[in-house]
Image: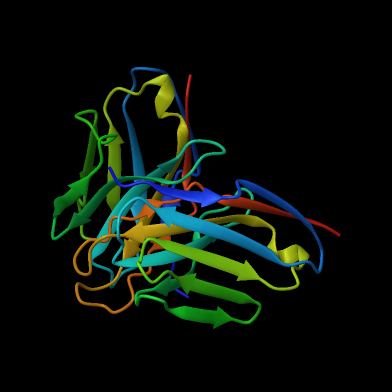
Length: 116
Length: 113
């Protein structure tokens, strides 16, 4: 069964450093998302991406965040200058076509980001 | 902004007992999805409800979408240890295009064998 993959599984970085989290969505999917989950809390939407541009973003997704689909298969989330409060599990997700009847989102296993 | 709340936050049940989690949105939803997250895992899609008053069943799981499309529930009959995890509802306000999901606060289910 196709699945979303994410690398790395765990990233430790120092405050102020840049990190790039990588995702490979399911190959025939057109919509891509990033969510984050602070330990023990709910899943929070960050950004959605379609047709090589951001479709929607939350208030969490400020100027420190950016997304890119550099090569047609990878989907990346960059945090330019990490803060302690960026420590969380980051999930990538993807879903199918524009007019699909089922809007199921497939989540990757996540990248645990620890900012020290 | 849109808020989606779930109750209870935690539920401990004896194996074999039933379990229900309730989901309430501050705004009318286009559709609602339910996800299960095992401890240390990622959200896994369970089901989507679209129609007002819709009821869907998956084996021991029964999902309902309220008439006003602002609330939903998940009921598990005769819980098993494999049901352990956190159950999230996730609402969307739009039919088409990117489906920004607003996740509920989740209900963590633990089973006492």
